[in-house]
Image 1: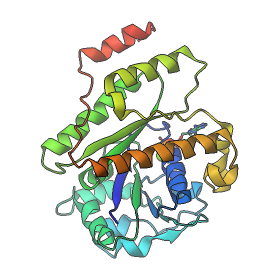
Image 2: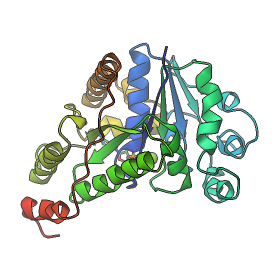
Image 3: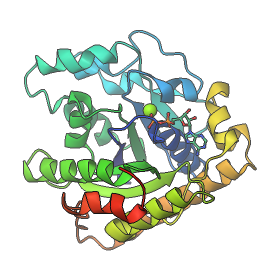
Length: 288
Ligand SMILES: Nc1ncnc2c1ncn2[C@@H]1O[C@H](COP(=O)(O)OP(=O)(O)O)[C@@H](O)[C@H]1O
Ligand SMILES: [Mg+2]
């Protein structure tokens, strides 16, 4: 069984990366996939959101610096088939400490590869910090693809073009020639607002089938679940939030399988050009 290794990244904070990481991971586990979630954000929201207290020594920090094995950092969660490598506040120092070691952009890949060789997991999801620093660059160098959670707000397209340009740069630099845009999932979607509808339709225009059909609505149960240390499918399994993440996971799995059956590499969608981006603002008819 092949491991899929996918980063959840977006340089903006508060767009739903961690929420999507936790809930996609949980829904994949519900669908009988063996899932590992690696929390690489020093804020440790994925860790606490799955009911674990961030503890010194439990994160990937030492492994990234060449001490110990990633496999030894894996912990079980309350959900069957869902494991986690937790984060802790020490990871904040990793940005600086990794910069001092050899091959500093490859530390994550070199930590991950021995674990992948064991084929213990079907999906490895990596929750990235809200920045494009050394930790995120390490992840982009190691993963197969990037899943971008996107909040339908005014500067969404600009933010997206930063991410897609970065993916192309990482590919072209040779650091990770096979890196792909896995897809874009719209989060906290509120169909009652014109802005959300307009942004969603513009994102679809630019990125076509890279955008998932499923959109995650704003839902109170989704935001409450982490304070109970549970994914929404365990916190309130019949809620709209749980249902929408289940649908998303189904679509996500289907796309992964379709790609496996058609081995030709898909091309990363081109970012909107600099000239196009301001026009997006103009077309929403709102002040910039
Ligand atoms: N679909 C949603 N409905 C309601 N609240 C949400 C939803 N998705 C995320 N949130 C809330 O928005 C905030 C930011 O989400 P988070 O996943 O932590 O973003 P990021 O990891 O990108 O910083 C959190 O408080 C989270 O609970
Ligand atoms: Mg987060």
